Length: 119
Image (tube, rainbow, N blue to C red; front, side, top):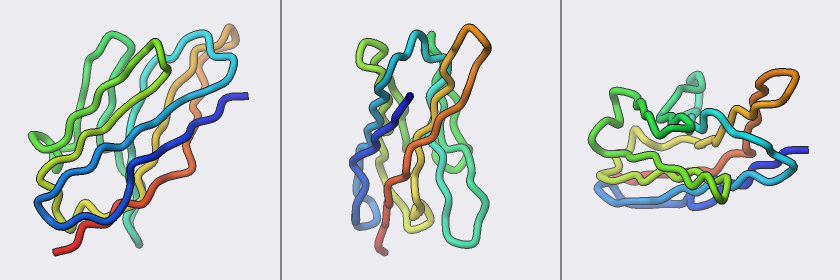
């Protein structure tokens, strides 16, 4: 059983910063990609940032230069540093990982953490 626990969300003023954390637990042999997604009210869930097992990253255009994703493979953890936050960044942020099993890869999602940016 794989579980993801997210933390670090909250309320912040525009221009402020937050750091989200995601920790995976369970009998995990190997994690391929780790990523952060977000879903604002009335909108579809979208990719914010993703990092592979070797550290390659990609970001949504809307967050490039402001957000930074990192991971700690020893801790099965991922982080999202969010700077220069804007009201349009308000959303529920979800951590997602791709675990490699013998039978093939499988995705797991966290429960989500609310990020609210006030203007």
